[in-house]
Amino acid sequence: MQIQLQYSCIRMPYCRFPKRRGAIPFLFLLLLLQGLLVLLPIVSSSSPPTSTIVPQKKHFLSCNWKGSLETTNEVDSLVDDLNRMWRHQLTPAQKEAVLLCVHPPYCFLDRVRSKLDSAIEVGSQNVLDATAPSGPLSGPSPNTGSITPKMLKAVGCDWVLLGHSDRRNNLGETDPLIGDKIRQSLDVGDGKDGLKVTLTIGELAWQRRWGRALPTLRKQLNALIQNVHHPDEWDRIVVAYEPVWAVGDGAVPCSPQEAQRVHAALRAFLTKQVGAEAAQKCRFVYTGSVNEDNAAAYAPLQDVQGFVVGRAGLDTTKLRSILVALAEN
Ligand code: PGA
Image 1: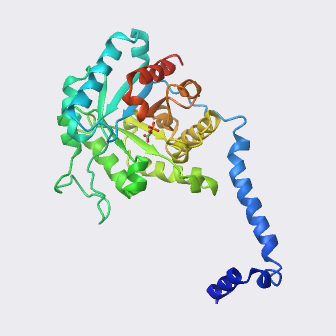
Image 2: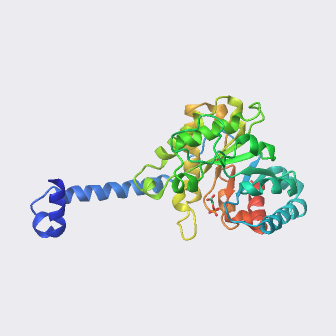
Image 3: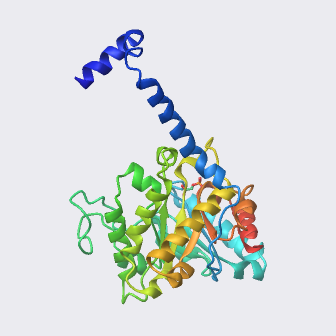
């Protein structure tokens, strides 16, 4: 019945709409509501809130190489550039102010760790990488091709990057699966010596348009909260906010005010759900196509303690500018 009505509306709009008087005001109200939902964050961004928690740790700068470098020559060349930058183009104060980390693909981790300056930390882009169609993982994965947290520790990894939008949106990773990976990464070894976790969370354009940005982010953050079992573990957690709609060439950037608004809301949520201590220990960093031109606008934000960068991390001139912008705040 409903389908028939819609079908006849499409074919003969002139004869259907005048008879259904409620439809036009309803459509008008719907459009008005959608407009308000879109405007809400913009209006409220004029004076972005700041959290009352003052984070105390050094800034964090992480480079996600994704699949950009595919040969050992390319990898070695970037490692040489990074070593040169770290050893000769930064002051001791700048190096002291920022924790720098790189995330090469699995197959280059061992090579990068052995050639890179030991002051720069190394992380994987993932762990236990199957999407586990039968549900969350239930222990160290015995599956062919699996990379376990213990293997990452064995090649000198300090960090693991989880929940990236590529993996959530293109490879179908779910919050329960990501939560399971978080727990197993923190647990490796005797627990105290486990991997440190950078969890990316972010909302898509349609979620923001329909006022679902913060609920989406809170849901993703809950997967983390449920899998951090000890207060000290929050020292080993970084949450990276990626407004997915603002990433990539040609995308409309997320304003610094809006980034601050979201970061403050996330920290407030963590405070409410877990406590002030966790919210102070956990770092919140921004990852929305940060580059050498816009880093200085995001670096001073009170609730932004650093960045995860993609493309800008492959060029050490750009990376140095970003690191210096962080060190100056
Ligand atoms: P980008 O990538 O900095 O190149 O935009 C960010 C990311 O997707 O991690």
